[in-house]
Structure formats: C-alpha cells, structure tokens
Image (cartoon, rainbow, N blue to C red):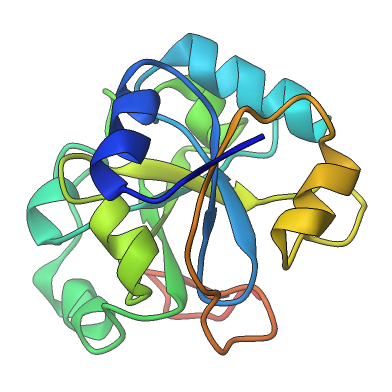
Amino acid sequence: MKVLHSIVEARKHLDAGEVLAYPTEAMYGLGCDPWNICALENLLKLKVRSQNKGLIVLIYDWSQLWDLIAHVPDSCLERVHSTWPGPVTWIFPKSEKVPRLLCGDRDTIAIRMTAHKVAHDLCFNAPIVSTSANITGSTPARSIQELQVQFPTQIKFVLDGALGSGTAPSSIFDVMTCMQLR
C-alpha cells in the first residue's frame, strides 16, 4: 500500500479507475470514480458488498449535485443547505444518468458534501464514491495499519491525512421527507 501525500496524485489514480483509501470525518473511506463501472465493480468486490445496496457519493459543491439527481423541490433543498457541508448524507431521487451499481436496487442516490478538508479537496474536480474502508461486516478502518490488516494487498493507494473528530458514520436523511434513516 503506497501512501500518497498529494491530492493531485490521488486524483490521478481515481481518474485512472483505481480504488483509493482516504480519511473522512470519522474513519477511512474507500473511493473511486462513480461513473467508472470497472472501478465500482472492483470496490464492491474489495468490500465483499452486494451490488444491490448502493454507495454514497461525495461532492465538492452544489454544481456537482445536478448530474446525480432527478428534480427535487426547492423547499426540500433548503433543508439540505442547512446541513452542508457537513457529516450528513441525503438520499435523493437519482438521475437516469447514474450507473445502477452506484445505487443498487434503489431509485435513489446517497450524497454528502463533506466538510472534511482532505475528502472535500479530493472531490474538487469530480465527485467520488465514499464507503467505509472495511470488508462488509467488519469494523471500519481508523488507521493505515487497520487498512493493511483488512486489505493487505488489495488496496494499492491511501491518501495521507488526519481523520476528523467524528466517531460514527454520517447521519442519513431522505430529502423528500426529511426523515432520518440512520
């Protein structure tokens, strides 16, 4: 596992279809290009995760949201504005452009505009997938050493950086109902 110290270098690997580990608000995440089917398949295989579950997408700013979602009333978007950037994931109706592997069996997509500096900067050029860095059912990695235990040879690159002060995965809300799902 090669430790990267540059967002630019990490972004090059994402753009080339690699799966990358990187720090987030509470734990390491695994990410890839959300539009790259091979990268999505590789990420799901690494995690031993069902293709039916769907994944979270991190965005840098509001301009990156529109290609990912279907129409949402402005009144619902106002609620999202009050929580972003931050550790809150919102479930939106998905755009028809979104790959099925990104959403699983759902007609919705999970999106977060993170406030974590490293993860946020990693999304500057384009959105990325964000899922906890663990094999499904295992404890998410909170250090590079824990990453190496769960993925001794499978992850080629990890972006260096401190984790945020969070201790749990992001809260999840439905944009249309504002109901908390997690």
